[in-house]
Amino acid sequence: MAEQVTTPKIISKDHNEQKPMQGLLSEAPARAILVSIETPETTWSINESLDELEQLATTARVTCVDRVVQRLERPNSATVLGSGKVEELAQLAQFHNCDAIIFDLELKPNQHRNLERKLEVQVLDRTALILIIFGQRARTREGRLQVELAQIDYNLPRLTRQWSHLSRQRGGGSNQRSEGEKQIEVDRRLLRRQRDQLLEELEQVRSQRQLHREHRKYAGAPVVALVGYTNAGKSTLLNCLAGAQTLSEDKLFATLDPTIRRVRQQGGQELLLTDTVGFIQRLPTTLIAAFRATLEEVAEADLLVHVVDASHPYMHHQIAAVEEVLEEIGAVGLPMVLALNKSDRCPDNMPLQLEGIAGTLPMVSVSALNGVGVEALLRCISETLMAQFDALDVTIPYDRGDLVAQFHQFGKIDLEEYKETGTHLRGYMPANHSGLFKVFH
Image (cartoon, rainbow, N blue to C red; front, side, top):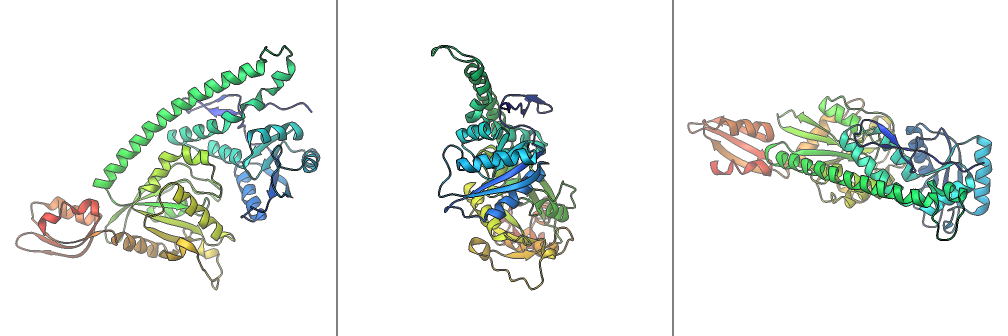
């Protein structure tokens, strides 16, 4: 079989259409075999990780026809797998009429090249599959910019395999460069130029987001960020809390672009709820870097609500994976509440023992789909935020009704009465709003 040369589609400069470009990330394959290795350093259950890889593949509309696992002391530096297993995999791909093999790890560029040459089908690793999904699901200009940057960072070290067929087709002396080598240099220059443009545009996005955050910090309601493992139900919970209609599907990475909604609690206080991209085990570093502008929304929130799929058999592993990403983006020290979602799927007598940071947090069992426990979660959020508020006992002159309205909008009022000198208020206000009130003690 002749070596295949894919022509993937990279998001174009105007972000409304796609243009062909020689690289690695193509349209998702139709049929694939999933492959994993188990070494002494493996920490996740192989079956658990392959189940998740199959979910990712299904999200990308790939049919998974088989699984292959090899136990090794260490991965083969050239092909990850042993030579015999590679031959077996090639035969299996022919038997199943597959057009791709998907590895549950990140392949090095030389491993990628060697495997495609030996297997004679498209080879994807875990990172490439996630990038394909992100490319399918990014909707906003910011999301597309971030995905395209991650794609370029992934493609740059892997360009050589796309032009190796030209090197073989042309002979020449030792000083004569092949057509493939020339094209690689051209592609690298184009990609690096495109990457510089993307970084410039994303820096503008980042600056705009920072301005919005500063405005919210000094003039808006507290920001509560929903974080959690992908498919834990964050978007469904946002819809339930805010009466919003954001996309929520039972798929991994159903939502990529950040969504902010205003929520008014029973006491009249307002919150800004933000939903961001879901986390996953071994989240590619290229994605964390590319989505920096979005993830900063999490790091600068006033409170995090860690949404957990309490019905998932590997819930504890998912919690640990989220905590690792939070640490990486500098959000570990923020106040946090645990929302144990999908509680309607859990047995009533199921014991729940959480370890580490999660075991020390206030927690509420909810079912975002059915609306169960949502009021209790809002109370828990309010109480946790209140611990960061300043206690105030003030009398506001009657000509400053704007301050009274602001207390109602952003604070919690325990007492309100009307005196000769003005409106007497006792309660709590966010620290970023309390300064205006302290002169009226």
